[in-house]
Image (tube, rainbow, N blue to C red; front, top):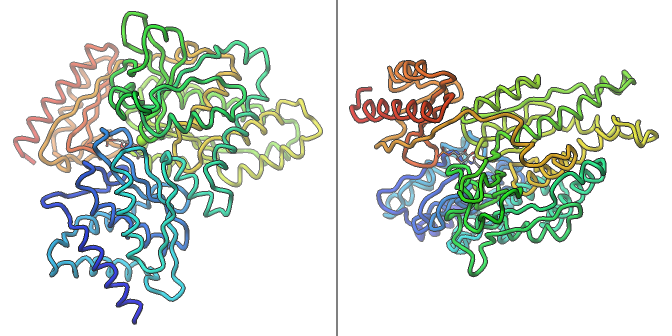
Length: 567
Ligand code: 16G
Ligand code: MG
């Protein structure tokens, strides 16, 4: 077929312009390919091919985001958004790894890459080279200087697939791109101004439903650290459209500000438990929040004392808890409706999804509220999938990535109930339905989104009239410690049960159990990082000394077993 030959040539010619750097291997990992930006051109080019094939296969718009999130500024990365705005299906990850790692630096194997593509195209029945084949890929990038050139590499990969079109959306937060992909595939308005309008409107709606005496109790001053990344500027833009919130944004990444993610941002604040650059003793008593470099993570914090940099961290677990308390309260209001028919329509399953990193005190708190709490391995793709099994699924990682998912059936029932109750403007059930509908509009349904998460947290604080101190007091975290162990091959560690048990190397789990048993409230697990060549150790216990010593003891076992290669 003539088109096919053109197609082969198109991929072959452009692939040879993007040789794979010698000796490197890339893995799609928990959140796409990430590395030092200078070695990424070939990976991004091939990710362009991958995104185009995915679009051909699904007949839908696909997203390609150039970002390395909270990594240092010299790194970059690429990830693909599926038609529903979620992460690339896990079934395609092995193909992604095979395609990206195939070395085509010499002509004889440039054909081999074609074979990899063609074999997969046949297996997946992708209409490559078909007369009516068309593919559309939305491209976004964060503010990294390397982003512009990498977007060009992605465009070349996309245009190597005949019929595929790239639409460059410019600088965006990662969640904005995921949101746009989802909306376009639902044939809904999907521009950046539509995104801002939807957030501002649903936030307004929630604030309008707050009893006035409550809102007055919340300290108006609120400061956000933009990590010198894309989120700060976007929040500045959004801020102008918001009523009911005063926010000052720092670390915007403008001239004279610091460097992206350097001693700033959600990852830094969460891991180091100290204030980011640009904050100081004048911020004592003020409610503060931090975004990460691509604005898909959010943590809150407050300064503990004017003469130290330590913070009281309100992490993803506490954001989750705030959301869960609020959602549960609205559902409880709806369950008190006297109309049986309406009440039955709204019987729903509310589920909370966490990972092993969730502080044990948060899990205990959520269970005490009577909520169903389930665990998945680390990585948004796992939590998101699990949360989507509920009518309302709330998921968060402790690091601040999470959102609330609503099933379409539940939302349509809510609309019906709200209409039925229209004649009862002040009744609490109707207000509860309106609040849940506004949350569904506000909180990003595609992926965790720091901007929409921040607006929801602010609306809920106003609703309860809570200060950040009151929020932080929901429960007290158990002391915890995280360590990294450098290893030659992180794949030597295999885990099960949402990463809480080590399967390989054999014998290691027994050693971890024996150490953990020595401590009151002890809990410890290890897992291979999905983003770095390390093994992570997490330990929790009733005192900081105990958590530190448990982590160190397990670190020693990991080092010994992995260097002895006794497995
Ligand atoms: C990525 C993941 C995040 C996860 C983290 C774990 C996404 C969008 N991001 O940042 O969910 O917590 O990796 O990193 O999936 P680690 O595997 O190095 O511990
Ligand atoms: Mg991020």
